Image 1 (cartoon, rainbow, N blue to C red):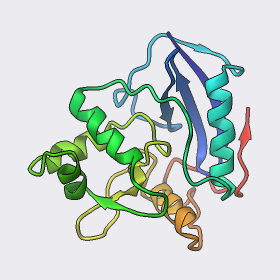
Image 2 (image 1 turned 90 degrees about the vertical axis):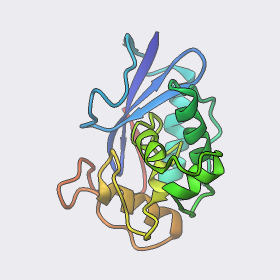
Image 3 (image 1 turned 180 degrees about the vertical axis):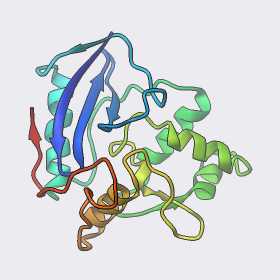
Image 4 (image 1 turned 180 degrees about the horizontal axis):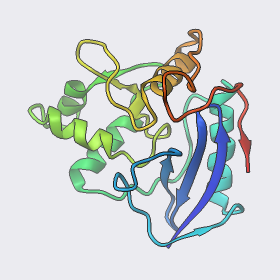
Length: 181
């Protein structure tokens, strides 16, 4: 059984999903329904993990939090879980390439598989797949959209923030404060 809560952030409304074991998903407004599956779900705005996740996300967007202290419940293959754990280990304000992640998890030739696992990361922001960029330094695919990815990277490096609602992304521009529904 999964529980969810909707939260409004500067990058749009996020759907927070938890199991009994921990935070299982952070999904975008227009997320591909096939990217992750958490069924069945019950809305629970008072679920302690979801309330704490919303609080910590609020601190992150306000610039007061550089990492998350939440129980995580990754549901995926062993390889995907290795990739997602490597994402969690990327320090705030830093980036890694897909090939660096592949080397870090002991599969240096699995760059495309790392990219695929990154694309199926169920815990955007908390398992910071936005910190993974192309080997050439360019921004690459992101479930929240490239403008949101640029916004998150700028937030973490104190750069001027692009407006996530621009250029057709799903996110909405907003201030640095998040409100929970």
